[in-house]
Image (cartoon, rainbow, N blue to C red; front, side, top):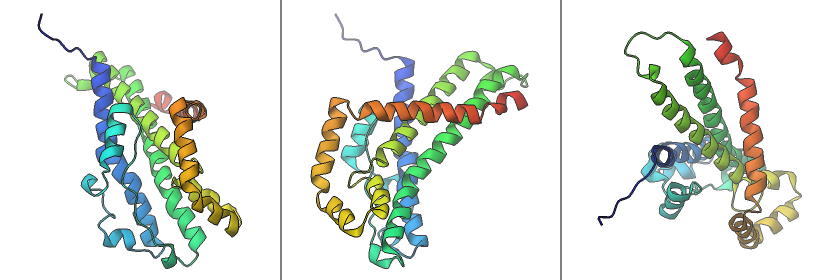
Length: 229
């Protein structure tokens, strides 16, 4: 009997969105770090070719592979030299938070597009417009949904206050200098604990909870779009 491999359209679209994240959203996240550092006086990332949306400059092979196959991964970290900032701690905090913020903005734009697609079924478009097809609308809406979920996952994961994630730099700004130094010196221990919590699913639960409610909040904020259309 010949071997056959069946995969659903939803699964194919999910992988397509993950590829879009690797090629478009991860570069946006890292470029946001590089641009913020540049504006605050540190050109380390720009000099190393990281102030760009070119995905080749930002791809980490292992992180991209995990993201593509499992929906969770990372890009190559942007180099930053805090000595070039006027205020080292503030500069590091603003540079760090720029990445997750770019994911949050991308997710919100995805929700707006999701609302527009959902509202389009009530509009009498001119003949031949592809989104008149109900099945096509479903697939486009599904891709937008996955796009929003992954962006929110990346935003929330990077804000976990554990080195070397962005959230540790945000937390470090509000900690006394000694406590920040202790946090960074023990980053391998904290990161190992965090990865253990991720593997066991303990950390995934609160992240999924926050993801759900942030998305619900975005849907509430944009509920006026169908009504206006």
